[in-house]
Image 1 (cartoon, rainbow over the protein chains, first blue to last red):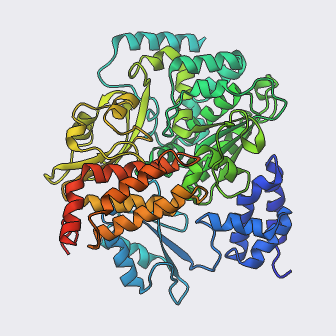
Image 2 (cartoon, helix red, strand yellow; image 1 turned 90 degrees about the horizontal axis):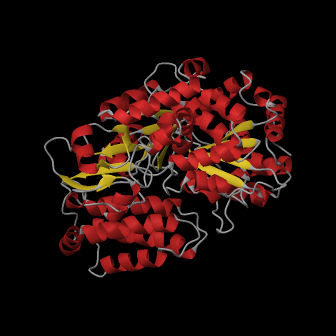
Image 3 (spheres, rainbow over the protein chains, first blue to last red; image 1 turned 180 degrees about the vertical axis):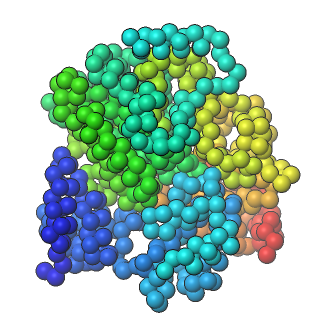
Length: 157
Length: 443
């Protein structure tokens, strides 16, 4: 098999599984470990997780495809996720999205050729009082306007 | 005993009923470093947890919370103490307590605030609820996107283990409790309790048919209680001051206080804590500063994206409690208040909400899986000038066929707002269809 966890990640895997009452309950945390280690959950990564979790690859694939935070293809260093749900839409999320598309020259679901940014549109991120907003990797950027959004993008290398 | 004094003081203060409501959930939200155990404890934190483990039997604790009148703050409003009492006492299976921190209802951001700024209150509530049902393993299921809140809760759990507040033989009582912070991975449906449990079992977040209810057949088929973050965060105060102090607040059937997340076209958006039964109009105009820029109110969603929109004339006499909002034709839900001014295109708003449900439907039940996408397409074509006069009745027909015909409340949550937008703003929909364009957008 091509893919394997490093010894450190394998240790984390064992610790994670040990905390849960049943092994299968550790599926999401283990998939996060795999995504972090391998960059994305490719068919090979899914097969490896299936072996570790003692489950059929199809079952693991079914879990991966259900959740939006698992990426089956490589993404850019900075994953921009712009909220599009009602409160952000009322606050001008469409303008923010248009600016990002224009500035980066990419459309939804695409990655810049230098691998710096991937652009996505997401549903409500529980930041409606500070709309419009976007999430880049784990960080929230709130109360956005065009000028602020531009500065944020420029600051990310 | 300091607790006796605290309770006496509350009875005294309750009797004089100050004008300015005492905050329960947000009382420490602006205190610097309140996410640290030392700060939380210096403000009296974990005294309730000590009190419960050292002095209370689980049945007494359940009775106390029943007497407080606390109801689930995730949206359904089910009495918390009663939910706990459904867990069988003599089951040979392990029992589980799950804190539902999967906040994703459109327009709702109160749980996120509590997790980030007062994580120990959420945790202490989780511990108290676990003790009530005699669970030895509690989970906090946090929405995957909320990385900061997850970190704060993980730190809080690590601190309490270190301080001996959780783990084995807590305070020498013989009671053991472990807490696991579990991160979701992006799926609105996992906020529904049976979907959450499927997800926690390592599967797709598919809701399960009820009955059997989680109280008897929950996580891995074991007795399980799922409580919302805000519900749990109220417990330390209730135990500290006593059930009567909490029950003295609010209305006859909606006790205590509730958090409201206010967003959209409003001067002062944010999270507010109100005594149940507070007048809606006064809240929007005085506390939240009203609709800004001299604009008029066009519509307001009172309880998160799943709930029917209300017209300005419909909120005139509404109070913010479960019964009053229901009587007005909507529901209090999560308390996510989305305000829309006169410039808002209601067709576009309806499309936005319908698109949300089309994206988030788990796909198990045909009426929801098919109906949500169908409604989204119809709203989209009306907004983009390709609507047909028969489309509006079609929306009402589809939403009527989803309502009550799915195994979880998601179907209703998609159907109710769609029908409400059409019924309450029919003129605007008709104009879009007749003029074959959005009548409010300046292109």
